[in-house]
Image (cartoon, rainbow, N blue to C red; front, side, top):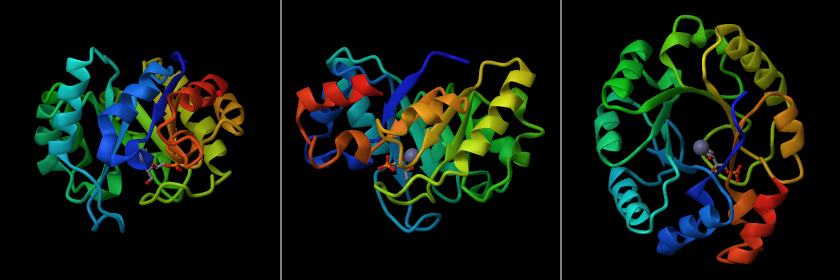
Length: 225
Ligand code: DX5
Ligand code: ZN
């Protein structure tokens, strides 16, 4: 198991001051920036694309913020946005296997673009997609909500899936990150970690209304995680 990483999802940040929000959570101890890309086609919501990723990356470089950007693609088709996100500064690019016509090719495109690659599993998607690609991935992302919106309730079955994914990773002997996304908060993060997770996405649990734009509150919350 790799060192634990906290990955705030900017979906719940204030987009009118995205740079400041990202800087505040990173200074408060977060490790990764989770960047949710939704296309109003694969999922019923529309968010941000490579232009915003590039602006954010440039801002982070100017501010000497070195955290990786973890781009979670909820788009269909997948392949034609990979190069754009790689050029925009993405470090990890993950996608949903159902959204790709050719999963192995999408993984190869991500790697060829110089990024780390991962597959994302919806609550009802089988981990069997991993069988032939364990040697090509750097991350497995288990969804603990149905993708599309922040602020949903954690689906407990995701814990079983984390345990199963952890076994696959350990058996592979490879350095593969195991990430969870959806409904993760300071209150349930210990249980999620015990199931084998090492990378914790949290949107509303960090950028929630009560905490919004308050660097001190981010500090307190992230320290509890
Ligand atoms: C949902 C996104 C998540 C979302 C998590 O489709 O992939 O990253 O922002 O938000 P919370 O932590 O509020 O469930
Ligand atoms: Zn996400």
